[in-house]
Image (cartoon, helix red, strand yellow):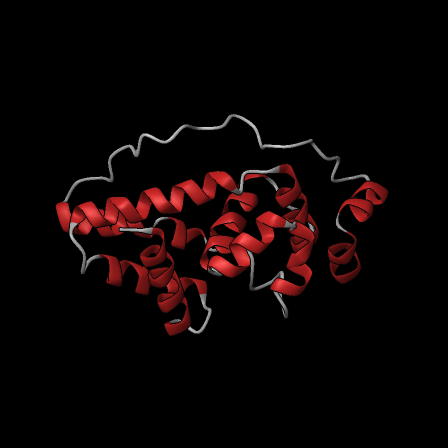
Length: 170
């Protein structure tokens, strides 16, 4: 599976789910179970690679502002949500996290920003296909987020770092 096919699967299942993250996860599992186990592993590698790429302080700060606070677990779910939004939103957010103010119009912290189950879709599909858990993907783990650490309690620093998000959500 190449990157284009990965994003096509993410986009088509999100569109079919009408943006609902739980329905998106269900449709993603359904779609992945139509593939062979090796393709599901490829999908999982693409997903996990992007999940790791988004493990950055500036994106965590964006999540903290948009969600009204983001601990480690909610940041994980936010990164799943970010991937679930598709290539345009994901790559745009990585290029400039403050652009999420425009990339995610209508973002509602009560209903958006958490796509935990989307993050487990490949695991569930692989297990359905093989009756085995998804094997280790062999990707390097990171102990801490990339970039310069930010003090999420420092309103002035957060507003300076992500002014459009701060204006929209703080």
